[in-house]
Image (tube, rainbow, N blue to C red; front, side, top):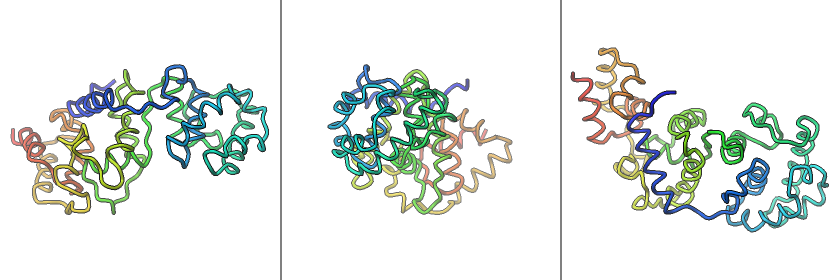
Length: 283
C-alpha cells in the first residue's frame, strides 16, 4: 500500500478533525444502524430528497421492514404507502420492488459485499454501492456524488466549463480515503458539501480546508485563467528533469491532481505551492 503524501494526510486529518465537532446526527449513522441492509434503506430514502425528510421516515420504514426478507416479501402497493412521506412514492416503490426481486432471485435475499455485484443490482448506482460497502460492510470505499465533485473542483480551482469526469474524482477520493477512518471521512465529505461547500454561498470561513483551497484563495472557479507562463515552465522543467507526476507529488507532499490541474492551467497556484514545486525542480 502506498504511503499517503503530506497533502493526502493533511487533507484527511483536517476534514476528520472538523467533522468530529460538526457532524450531523442522522439515524442511519448510529452504530446499530451501520449494517448493509439499514444503509440500503437509507439510500433508498435519500434519493432525490433531503436528509431531514429521509430521517423522518427512516425508523418507521425499519419498523415495517426490519430486514431484507420482509422487504422482499412485501408488495409494490404497500411500498407506495410507506414511501409517501418522502415523495416520488410510485417511482420508489417500483424500483425497490425490482431491487428486492433481483436480490431474491440472484442472492437469496441477501446483499452482496463486492462492488461489481452491487452494481448489477437494479437501482443501486456507484454512489449507493460504495456507501453500502463503506458504512454497511465496513469495507474502505470512497463515496463520490455531485457534492464531493464540487468540493474537489473548488479546492483545485477546476473551471466549471471543463468536463469533470466522475471517474477522475473517484480516483482522487480513493487516493485521499484513510483506510482506518473511511466511514468518518465519507460522512465528513458528505457533510462538508451539504453544510459548508454549498452550491450557492459557500461558508468558506467555516471550512476546514480553506487554507489550501483555491476557491478561497483565488475566488470563484470561473475566474481561473488558461495555462499561465509559470505553469508551462513548470511542466517543461518537470519533464526535462525526468520527474513523473507521481514522483513529484510524493516529494513535494502535494497531490497528483493538484500538479495536473496546475500544469493544465485549471488553477491559480498559491505562492506556497509554487515554492514547494520549484524547490524540487530547481535542484
